[in-house]
Length: 90
Image 1 (tube, rainbow, N blue to C red):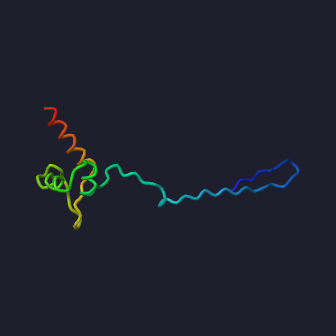
Image 2: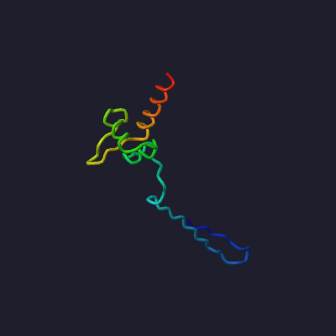
Image 3: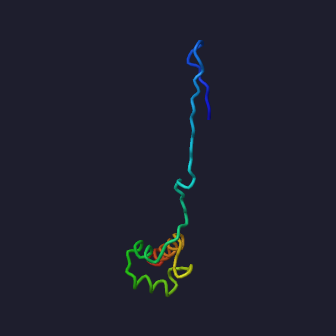
């Protein structure tokens, strides 16, 4: 953006150059429904690997595979937590 600004009535015009450069690849993107690995599930729930594997095998924690990785979403994990809270309340 070029802006011409006269200093006073008798002086020359000073050209002020302002360049706004943005790099979209440097902007932080927020993913609301991020993917979680089994290790992330363990850390979130403060459970060991064996207990987490049991919950996944029983289908209590819903997961899916991409290649060799087993993943879940934050929403699915929150659904599991909400279900456990409801079971405890009943």
